[in-house]
Length: 420
Image (cartoon, rainbow, N blue to C red; front, side):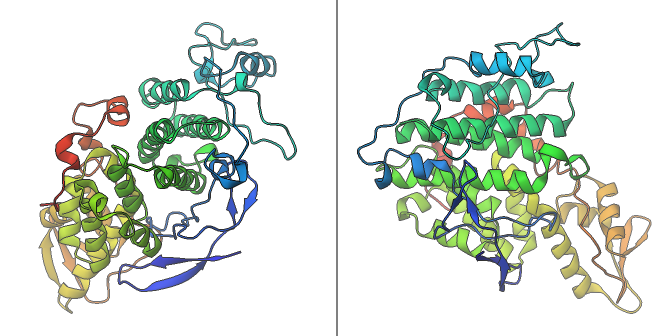
């Protein structure tokens, strides 16, 4: 079992034990250089190493597959008919896949709603035939459906939606890895799937995380998605249109990771000069330097998808900013700051969040001010997660998740130049 490194806010690096890598089929694979390290995402759950999936083993570009041409999927539906029949017979249909009006003792699968579930291939089992694999256009349409019709469902709990979407997106990546697909087609599917997963995971509240929506499993799946996509980029000759954005998302999701930063800095200079990567590098630098005023100023300007990627670090950053204020201002008699200032500095969603944050760290409140008394600041448990409406939810600005996931990047977003 190898070791991974974690970068702390002060710039120190400590070694952490890391689990062995697994591929998309759950089989052990050797560690790969440049695997992403743990990073402090609120300390809510340990960061796992970015495992590699079946794509490396089954890619038509892999030397191991030279002389062996992989089939192309032929299934025209989001879920093969044979799987729909089997799961219907075994009563294993998810309620989000059931035909309206057929709920009860014998629910029927709706071909327009049923989505192929993830099933890890058993060792020695032959590859599925082309008729059970969905080609890239169908896979992209499946991700489009999950983002547009499922992610925002109000008749199901957030945990149920996240668990369903995460499982079906994992099946999308597996189908893609088992067939011969060009890099451009593969990148389009992987980008849409990863964007959808980042967005739905960001909506999950800590108290709702359970079962299939376990935060450790979701973090592992996100890292798998980044691994598949970045390997696809590495194989291609020309840059992909959205590569700078997703390389920036990789760095933001792994904020503070030494290895993630090293991988980004090894990208071509022309790619690093693009605005999304410049912004991500600026956020990472502010995080490492402990420049919390600049960090939260930059976080306010991030687009929605980038905000979803960095959301897991926000609670940790707020805690460290409050600790620095306490060290600077605490006296035996106590100095005070207006709660309005705390709200603005840390981009909180109102006075109530500022009060909760201060109380969680042992600070005294005096009406609309916080009192910094020497020896009172403490860190116990996780910092309050907050709603993150200001830094995340408000960024949609009337757009749907489908539009965010499927939209092409604007030219002015990709142009070179550092962030303001």
